[in-house]
Structure formats: structure tokens, C-alpha cells
Image (tube, rainbow, N blue to C red; front, side, top):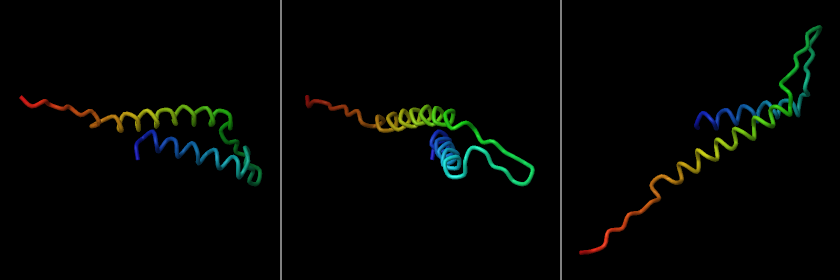
Length: 71
């Protein structure tokens, strides 16, 4: 897994946590606010483009075929 793929998985896990558990978590007298969902969605989109670019670059390697004519 590439670094970009790992970051994408992490962002998606954060989005899932917000959707399942909410934006704020309260335990006793303490409260934690998670990252803004809109910001995570923008980051997800950006990293998804990076992953796509990486995959396209990998698919492009080795695909050019040079043919040599007979003399």
C-alpha cells in the first residue's frame, strides 16, 4: 500500500467514525470534537486524485512496445 493509499484509508476511517459516532464525543466532563466532515471530504477527494494519478502512472509503465522491423 502506498503512502497516498494509506492516507486515503485513514481519512475514510475518520469520516466513518464521524458518521457512526458523531462530530463530538463526550465522556464524563470531557468533550472531544472531531475534524470537520466537510474538510475531511475535501481531503478525501484530493487524496483520491493522488491515488488515481499514482495508479495511472504504474499502469503506464511497461506498456510501450517497441517493434523493430526486419532488415
